[in-house]
Length: 383
Image (cartoon, rainbow, N blue to C red; front, side, top):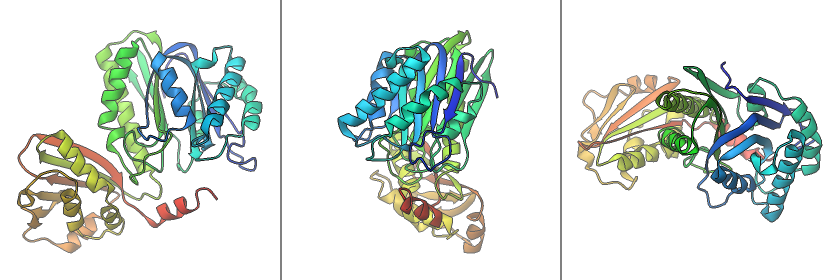
């Protein structure tokens, strides 16, 4: 794995959710020089304290460190939550020898509970001392119900791009519910980095859904140490590929997910209509449960397009599932075979293609099935 120059990583156990939980749950990324910073955050009107602070720092466009924790979202904690986050930022900044407004906080976990700031602050010296070259330690520290750490990288000429993310549940635009950090060592301006990140997430993080819920803590940060000169076109391509790969990893590791589902809508009046239709199908609980059970109930897909709110003629709709035509002109296709579709729906990856007309609009969304385990995980999350 090619790690961008100038960045170091660490993690420690701080007992964030509980002192009895013995796993790393606080992570740090440190840049040896002042990094260019870009950030995209949740559109949920209920924003966690680290999101409020992170937006302020991202607006200034410079940072030296990212301080993250799992097990506690520090959301719906009022002014005290802001104070707690800033206290930890100051503690980390003091140990690192940087300004506290150069430390970006990230949190994920249970909503409505104060951070255990004393326990966390006491572990920050060890967190700083542990800084090293392995990004996976940070990726593991921010996991909640994830089953594996999510780290991807690309080599772009002389530069490198690295992405780290956590996800698993409450995955829905905008953004997809997650914490993610993208790092590069390429020389780049804040304006260019902002443009690249916003363009890249539109067809990746803003095109995935697992359960339709939007978190209070969504954040994607991008930082560059600006140590290597490389073509901006190639850097944009590398960042886009890393973000795409992270988004697909988030879907593959969705809570209780057993299948990766790709849904493409074509022939819409415009891209916006195509996205509405694709996301309507992707978020349909009836579609997702049918996919889990390999139930050949194609009518649920067509119904979800129908209530998406877009204008189309049902008699112009064609639907293919994993290459097998199931709907022609809004009706069951000639020669439709339930057993064949049932077999296709047992596969780990399913592709649904929906043509709703002759317009230029097209969009692809990514989702999962909805299993018994999703209910089990989320009914026991706090306990």
